[in-house]
Image (cartoon, rainbow, N blue to C red; front, top):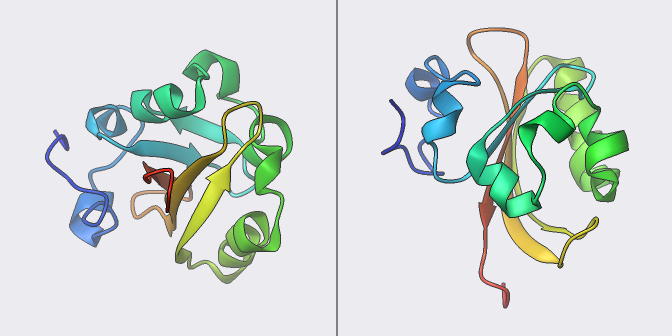
Length: 130
């Protein structure tokens, strides 16, 4: 169980090694697992509540093209693709999600998985004035 893992701790190698779509459900912040091409493999409840989209609506779809086109930017999509090409992704930044939702400031951490050839997007909502 990963319920007590914080946003700052989730990218530690020992935590990432235990993380999968099922264990991500216990996280209190958003967790989206992607294939190297950006197809959504897992989408936890916390992210579902933040984005107002159910896992059934998004799993199997491309995150950058179909689900969150507001992320087709150098800071987000291009950073993800560069990390995939390099085989090492570990990037943290602030962002505003605004596709079909109220503009929502978040902190994002893009990280390569440990257990397989997938990638994680971790999302923590920030106060509106951030």
